[in-house]
Image (cartoon, rainbow, N blue to C red; front, side, top):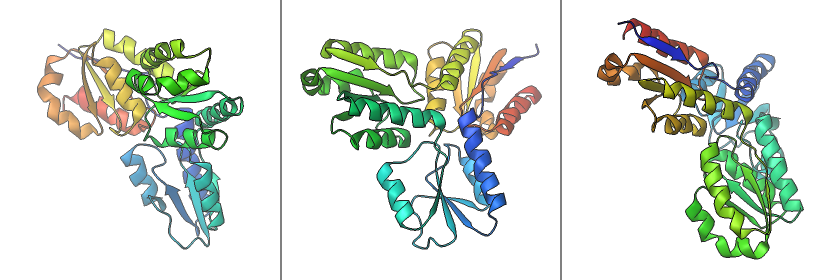
Length: 290
C-alpha cells in the first residue's frame, strides 16, 4: 500500500526568521571586506549556522577584542540592553535582527513594568529570548520574574499576592494549553491581572495545524533543531495523539525504518527555524522509502 505523506503548510521559516537569515546574507554581500559576527546563534538550527559560516558570517559566544571594520549582528531572539551598549562601546557596528514579534514582547514587558505591574514572563528562564525580555523589563522595575510551571507560580505566591497588580507576557513560542495552566494559577493571586498574549501568530497557527495533522496520522515527523523551543513544542503537542519522532536531519530517518514501514499516514511538520530544503529532503526520502 502506498504511503499517504502530508506536510504542514506552515512548516519551516517564519517571516521573522526568513528576514533575519536573508538580511545576514545580504549584509555580507554588501560588506565583503568587513568581518561579520553573530553573538549567539542567529536562529536555532545548526545547518543554517554552518551555511552562514561558509559565507563568512561567524557565530561566536564572545566577540573578539578587535572591532575595527567589524559588524555584530544581534540574533533573532534579541539581546539585553546592557549587552548591546557594551558591543557599541567596543566599537562594533551593530545590526539588530531581533524578530519583530520578540521586539513587541520586550516593549509590552517594559510598558507593564512602567505601569507598576509585577511582571511575570511565562517561558524558559535560560532561553535567550526570555533573558532579553527580562532584562528589558528590569531596566524599569525590580519586580520581574520568569515562570514555566504552576509550581514556580506557587513558589512566588506571597510576593505576587502582596503586589496585587500582575502583568503577564509570554515567550513567543509557548503553547496555549501550557500558558492557560499558569494563568489559572495566577488569577487567585491578583487583584488586577493584565495578560498580553504575545505568542507569535505563526507559532500559534503552526501548533493548530500540527495538532490537526496528528489527529489523522499514524506517525508525525517533526523536523528541526532539538535546541529550538518552538520545534520541541510541536513534538510535545503531537506525542499524546500520535506516534511522534523529532529529527534534526533527513539521515536520522534511518533510525526509525521499522516504525516508518508500519505507518501508512505520515505527517511532516517543522519548526520556524527549519530550512525548506531540509523539509523537502525528509519528504523525498520518505517517498523513496529510504
